[in-house]
Image (cartoon, rainbow, N blue to C red; front, side):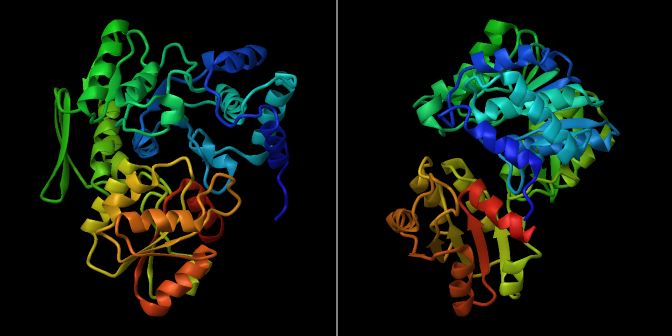
Length: 424
């Protein structure tokens, strides 16, 4: 494959800081100042934090806004197949020429100073957004919130906090309350905040932060409600009720994500076209995505292949719920995970939903768990486990025994990215 110019610059950026994650905003503020503060020149910002559901909620908000005829910038991470996925300008993925230009400008403006890869690429996204017309800008937090590189907009239009759970303890804290405090760091004085379903400990921290800053809250279960009834999604808030189709993104957890997206759209007074588009037109790859083309599908034509990038305990619960909702079929997992994740917590809910797990290492990832380690974790939760050298090898073994199996490739967005690069 031909190397893109943007790839060369991105590789250079990786060398600017020895640590992959180092939470502080000092380096970001310095570079933004050198770029003439693009964060002050954005279309109205919707800022989204949380442990689970950030990406899906953003995708639904974007689909809703676009369904109402609005042009939308969107920033998300990590990417799956190529970096361009992180930056959408007015609804379209950033072009190679535009990406190369803003990356090069940020690299030059940084002057060789220490800065993390995520920080400098976030500055590049903000620079691109500041120079293109749109009605709204959607910013998804990378990690935490308070010290995340996206948390540089003084006055967003609205903030959103999706469900908070235990994840990234080494960076955000070892209790739910500490993690919630980091997520609540995106709340700004006087700016409304939409809050998805939360455990009590997390909600108390969010409510305390909002009260201290005078930020109005719209909380799930208090100010807005969402549920299903007769195969429809029912959303209700203080202004009324909406009866809508079920979300096209699969899983019971997507009902909650849809509710948060609808709460944002209702706050912005977008109207019925936006509400329906939010639940019927959202696209979010590697979240229970059915693979329909590519070498793996050709290799196993009678199998049902699914891809999911969830990687923590809450994601495991959500995935188990989705599997329970599908028609009965022999189900086998192909799983690769990072060594920074709660592997047992992720796998435990899935142990009763799958007939087996074949563990693989994630190609090209320094922090991958070995296949043997993932298989050992599966065995601890009573999930029949084996190993394979690759996803393709695992699929051969599974379909040799069960040609029409349901096969779920899961455990990491990095593994999902490897699959999508060849099977999108």
